[in-house]
Image (cartoon, rainbow, N blue to C red):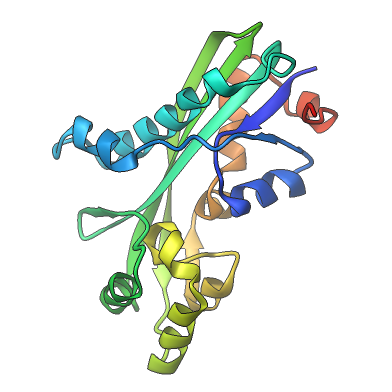
Length: 213
């Protein structure tokens, strides 16, 4: 039976998979994202940046796969960033940065890019790989000053790409999106389905699988 390994600490990605009938085995990659981006160079296309980050995360956890899991497994790595004004924005980390970003993007739109990489592993050996990115246009609302400050005080925007969520408190300030909502949350189910198909795994195989303990 094929086990799905999620190479991410994101609770949002975990929730998306669980609601879609999959209970993944979670391994956190610990990849130095800044180092990956620096190695790609300033001229790298935004879609390549998020896809290479996803690949780095998926690859990083391979040595950590327990032997009982590595017999038949698919590893999924993801990375999301907001593209606005030609610049990729990751996690703001501080309230001051998040505040500045919201003041610049409220009432406007940006493109949320999510890179995905799927690795198929059998008996500890990678036998297949598929990767791609999804792009979803996000139209931001205009929160009041008080609401913005309350949102910043919640701490939510500091640790998420683009300083917003669709499935949390930030959802109040998203007027609409054009594209896949699950991708905005962090893992695009339609794209992952296609990538899994490329490495020979059907979705129904994962519905019945449970993580090793």
